[in-house]
Length: 227
Length: 242
Image (tube, rainbow over all chains, first blue to last red; front, side, top):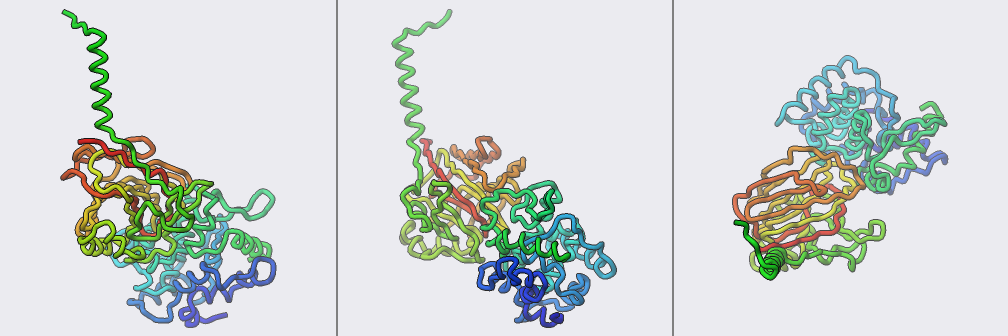
């Protein structure tokens, strides 16, 4: 299990490669994780914190702690493979997470405020914001808006894609990246309704997510193994 | 006393009205990419910012702006040559402004040097874009790079008129209604310009009216935003006499 420092240096994809999820992809049950694929390179490049260029280290540390990334570096790693299972809601926020969510909600609602983007809190800090947003729907809406506004250098497109799909499904709309999976009547995982399914892998590629078939396979394997 | 016109007078009036209508509405100009190679830049548009290619959409060749590799402040390849080709000696000022507006991919239609009055329409299909999903009509493009656009944004579900002047983008007017269009479906965007009166249409419905400060005069084309992936087809310009 990598420690927090190695997470910061190697970025989210290093975490991903170390998780059981990646093991599922390389164990022969799904297509192997293609580390030369564009989506993988895109995520890895975005998640690189090795240059330590963020401006607010104390905020970064606080966010990582509040999101629990310091104790569980794998938190939310499944979403990096481009899937979430609808209905598997995260635990209600507790302790420092409650305070952090309230602070982020205030920032999101205050025009002109400095949102914690990559140049402010680094890639791990942004990932912490994204994890906290998954625990609070009001923050999720504000965070999505601020992340989209900040642009791809400052916000990870893969996280933006998952967040947008999650909010669309919650609001009764069709998703656009097919990151939200549901169990069909026969127990298999399948995407919740998608807009324009023909171009879905094009959109996933643009957002730095693996092809849908690969994500469904990873999700199915994870479910079968009780992951 | 009731006025009665002889049949020959009625015929004469009808003929005069027909000629007048013909003068007012010139022939439509369709900017077509049907002969272009899929994957190449369109030959009938000049991409100034962004990555514009010809794509095959169910057997029909269309123009696609592909924002997958979009980077902030990145003009299209060969910008200087392209600017020189359409603006000659004035191209340097145009380039400076295009760089200021590099957030917004644009492609200028060839062969339409000065659109002033009439209609411009196109069909668009949003395919993707994590930050933006936009399709717009570019018009009033000046030699210094200033321009106007009426655009649809699928992340905001609205139609808006924007001005781009001397490196600054300014909001002008938003259509009061929102239009949640689905990705992967074709829609028509149209503007009608009569003097300073501008009307914007979405799928045949008038959605935006605005009186411009001065009459329109300039080049036209396609407009997009940041990482949008949008397909365009049936770009048609119908000039009309003032």
